Length: 306
Image (cartoon, rainbow, N blue to C red; front, side, top):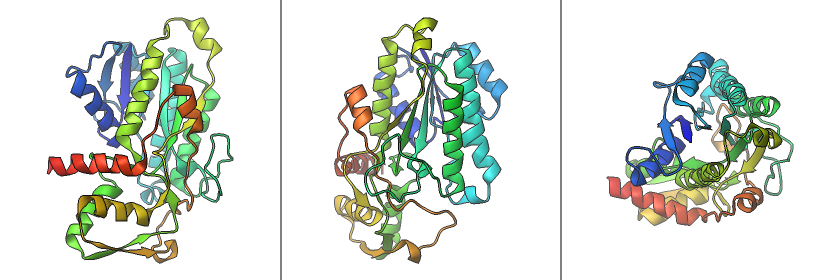
């Protein structure tokens, strides 16, 4: 089985790469060979480039970690956000269907408006409030309309990692520059440690490895696109998240709770981003770690790298 991972230099792609390389330095596992690419190796907004890569390397599974994630800049760069989050997903889905490739696509809680009162399930009505969320939803819909075989969409939220830029690393940097910070307390959700999500994706792929990828009849019988939600367990606000980062790291920076209205941004943020993970836990028989436990693990990794 040959697996293409797009967006390999991002947070999730980097964690996937790290997990594979730690056990298999040549990216060859007992069940698969991985091809890790970023935009320099493969432009997913170029359909011909995707087709050529998939044909040349006999790709069986695509994990699309690539995305335009600059939420505020997307309000101005609408065409770029749409190109990466929508049209590229459409191309990946079309090629996946034509070549019986299984596509795992990563989406976001921003497809919802954040006005719910209980954790969002996969079938809840979507209503994005900004360009970023709308472009990600457009990608989801394109994939669902095309129906590549045995493919899935995983929505996640508040992603962080020891790789790349994220809230955790920003807080650590600011704590060394300032004595106190104001952090929003009226937006709640659950952080997602990219490494935990990466491990879940590898479990899903290993399940694919048990199937006969060449059996087109089997593929056609399970061709619907399933949607799953994934984040760590528990709930917190950005304020709680920041407090936990400083507490675990032993930093003395004071955190002051502020309202969203006190920190205006070009793009609206969901005030409620809790995702119900019951479906993915049941289908793939996984246990999801508590957010503080995963944060502790990530912070140890960051501090050991310094």
